[in-house]
Image (tube, protein in one colour):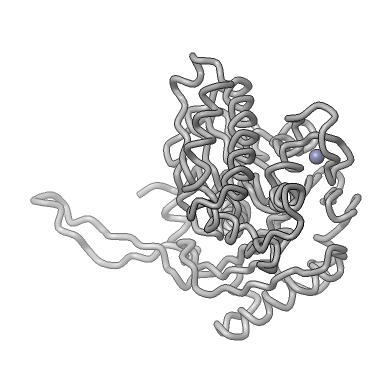
Length: 361
Ligand SMILES: [Zn+2]
């Protein structure tokens, strides 16, 4: 028995569940993780929702709560209040006290800088140097880890999703905003100040449409949900698709219209496919990945409709050598890729004692 398993038995994480006949040899002890040893909470702070999920130690979902965000001006105090409220509600309903929650992982949009205390830079919300972690720590007496949502999701795809066994890949989060997580040599590539992977803000159209980040012509300005909706408005401001309601409902209505052959919907999604395909070709040329995963709520919702167009644009713009070794897949995780990834990060940090992305070899 290895030292680490012995330690886990001592800690109560792993329990001996009996003896197993090993075909003539000495009977082997069978081990299992005690699912009630402790729990994790994963939080996805998206631009349209706050989604909070309770996991057991095997990262199986036990409960979840989703709050829709409606206001365009999202204050850190408001986000903190929603997270705290959801965590307390879940704990109350599942009857799990603070000491049984091993850790909370929170995935947020924007750049999470971890040097000198954790601060978040999310220009989309007007967040500059926001200390969300302090707001949460004041109310929740549970260890908390904060990270960028797309980066957390990339790790979840590598461990549980379409990227199992993949050492070089890029995971795309396509929703209201667009981000990505780059896995290089089996590790998340974070860059100097943890902002690597801001693929949504790479320029696809010189002097193009103004982007929320302050630049112009970014991929997000055309293929993030507000950018897609703006393209419907530009073509036909009175189009009924625009009456669908929320961003998610509007993108869903657009997808349905395209599947029914609506010319405007097809034209808009053809443009979106072309933009994403060219952007993905840039990633292929830059990183030579074996896999690109399309995720995020808009990416998943539109995938069936846009995939052929995306693939043909990728073929048009990518170099043939890296193109010949790359696969394009749609995320296998549910819409909870970010919360699962954040909970998984918390598991690694608080249980295994290491941070799979901060540890340098
Ligand atoms: Zn931008």
